Length: 220
Image 1 (spheres, rainbow, N blue to C red):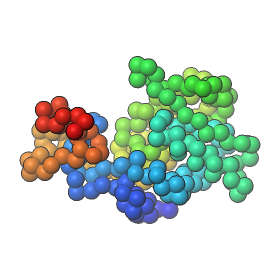
Image 2: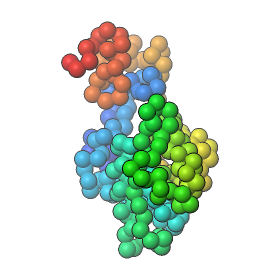
Image 3: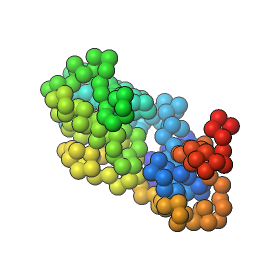
Image 4: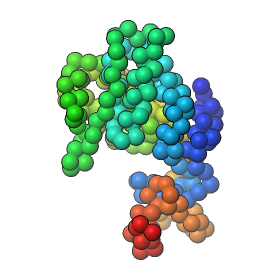
C-alpha cells in the first residue's frame, strides 16, 4: 500500500477534508484536515490500515501494542490482532493490545486497569492515528519507559507534522502509512481569512475559535 492508496482510502471514508477553512489545535489555519474519527466506524478500513502497520513491525518481536486513549484504543486492538495472525512471523506468543490514559492534570499519560502490570520488561509498539507534533505519542513512550517497558517503535496512519524519531523520544523506528505536509498559516496571515471563507466548525478547533471571538455560542 503506497501513499496514493492511503489517500484514496481516507478520501473514500470521508476522513480527508480539502478545500475548507480549518483551525488546527495549534491555532494555525489551513485548508486540509485529516478527520481520524471518520475512519473508525469503517471496521474493514481500520483493519486494513492496522494490518499494514502490523506487517511493518511483525519481525520486531513486540509483545504489547499501546496507544493513547481515546481513538488510539481501536488502533491498538486491530494492530495486536494482526500481529497475532497465524501468518505473522511474530513468535513471541499472544500480543496484547492496551491503552494509556491522560493523567488528571493532562500533563502525562498513565496506565490504569492493571495494564501497568503488563508492561515491565516487555517489547512495546506504540500506535497513533495522526502525528502532528508527536506530543501525545512522546508522553505514551515516556509512560512505557517509566514502567521499564522497551519501546521498539511507533506506527501511525498519518504523519502530517514532519515528526521524527527524535521528536518522540528517539525511538528505534517510526513508520507512517502516509507522510503529508499540510500548509498552515498564523491567523494574521491566513489567506482564507482574507477571503472571508467560512470556518469549518465540524472538525478541528473552528467551533472553539469562533466562540472565543464571540461569533458562536457553544452548543448551538
